[in-house]
Length: 339
Image (cartoon, rainbow, N blue to C red):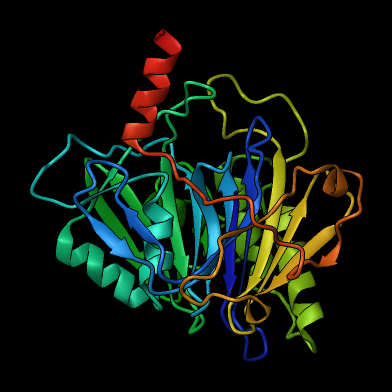
């Protein structure tokens, strides 16, 4: 599920792009979330916090933060990793439900280094949640990047976080785990090996293509050129519309993609089933504490028919609060279904 790249030296700007690959529409909308929102871990409510930074996020079914950027230039991206194993709950460690995992970092940190330090210090766990709309339990890993060009890839195997931290970690796809992806890349021509650049939709092949084309980008002369360049790389790693591979919901078509300029605070969104690209300038939004949570409805008739395009910073509307999925919500949904 997905490809992510970061371009840390785009003519004094840092840009990141990602594809969202999935076997069905995730009903993704964009949300403007201000400072001051009080949230908890979505598990037992033992970890609570007040958002220190406002953010613009892309959601899955308005129940899970899957991508986004905060006003400090920290950005995050949820991707699929089938090898993920989160382990049994250890009550001595703080926990975050996977629905709020990324949001915690966007709410609380300005840099990748600070986020990584928090994980190292606390040994925080991720708690999986089963999607009530499909019965699927996602297996995911997380990329974080910031306006300095720093990057981290966080994977949970055997219950603990393995973190790959540094500017050199510029590409991320899916299976196998990141350490194995790096070894596979060494077999490709241009990265130490003799194999030609691969062309399939396998995660390892997308990883190689993304790394190859990212390393050959020319310096942009404008923000427009920079955004277009990152789109060109992730489009090369996109997956065409097709039936998903059996038992692999991540091995399916690209349904949307984003490019975020972490230096100039612009978040660009493109759906593969909508006519137009839209973007949000974070500097145009009000993130002050007490301001409303606002939603950009990408599933509206206006958006579906192409009436939503270009700068949409002023098109967000009040649609209540974003309620990220929690264990308590799941229990209520299950109880309601049984009754």
